[in-house]
Image 1: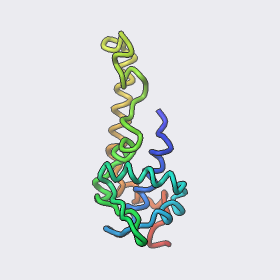
Image 2: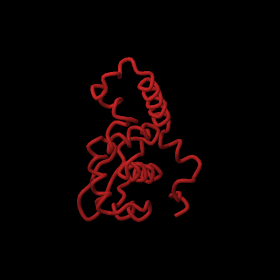
Image 3: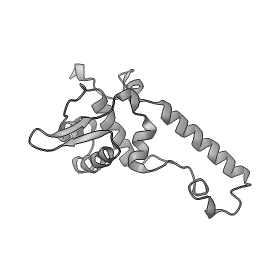
Image 4: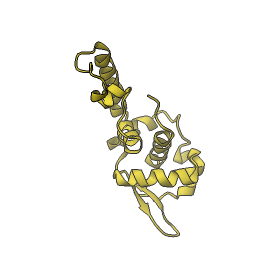
Length: 143
């Protein structure tokens, strides 16, 4: 399964915000520019991230987005699934009723194991860990 464009942009947004001062309101324009996210797309993604409790949308002239959780509490899995829905690798995992053999099929078991490994890997990747190697974004102290 390929992560959707929305999932990629949501990760970029949260990654950028995770590298900034806690409780800082960051403008939509800044995030859009720095993380190469189309402005209109960012607005839609921000609404989904806000519904999931990751960010707050602050209205007004000095508005923008504020990260509500600490980076060590946010996982790649949480962010991706908040905008793209639950990750699955094929139809028989998402909808077992679509295949009459799902309960006894050895291929189904392999798909399920692969899905669980992917979800485990993404669950273990917290945003504080992702920021440690400085490779994904220009650091706030380098701006």
